[in-house]
Length: 338
Image 1: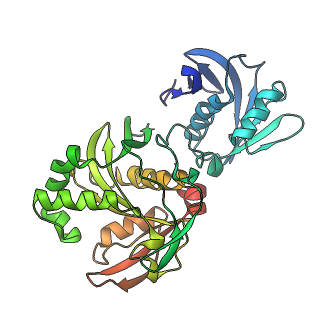
Image 2: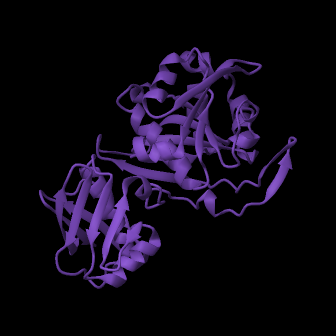
């Protein structure tokens, strides 16, 4: 059976993976293009190519194979692939980073923690990591010149656990003001955000964020239904920077789940992993994902700690006492990733 939707490839093709008991079949435009025998061990999954691959199969199709392999075997930290029969195909996949090692006899390795760092089909906007490094100074802080914010959708991932697709898109004040205004005026939201107000004030707030190079406001959606607001930022020039040793590409996020239907522990791991995934793959130089929730938001802080964040300390902003929470890049991909 196929549990993940087809992945769109260059040239108008699509790739999917059919998973059976001991085989994975790579499909190109719905037809079989390569077949692998699967052998599971404690922390490895070995895939052996049966025969060759369809001449039209692009190496990028391995995104579909490896995504299904790591999804179907949650314990596997490594997938080995015997690709000696197709050396040119293997070399091209190695160059793309889909295979992290490739021996002379065609034995290749793909590691879970490395595979999910690839942009794959999940990043749906140009990556911030493509923007060149140019140091500038603003507000007495030196930091990299930030890339322009993308418009529209930036990330999309199907979640087989719930049969829904999670996505993030840049906030559009014309389209999203009503829902943002409604959420900010909820009593439980205002308790932590302290931003209840008029539509006009909220519109001004969003326009100010969109004009600020250091911030990027996003709307999170399940099956394109908005459920939460994610105010991401570059930490180096943010108010959090004086309270820890901020790196040039550290990123942070303020979060609220506005639609109560999507609150709770069932969905929390899905969206917290997804926003972390987006921030890390959008900028490969990002080493940390940080946050500064209010210290009395104990349930939220505990949820963060349960999913890879470390509470480093408590400190005082002028308007609140905050907890510094940090997710390291390597911890996310090696232990708490997708």
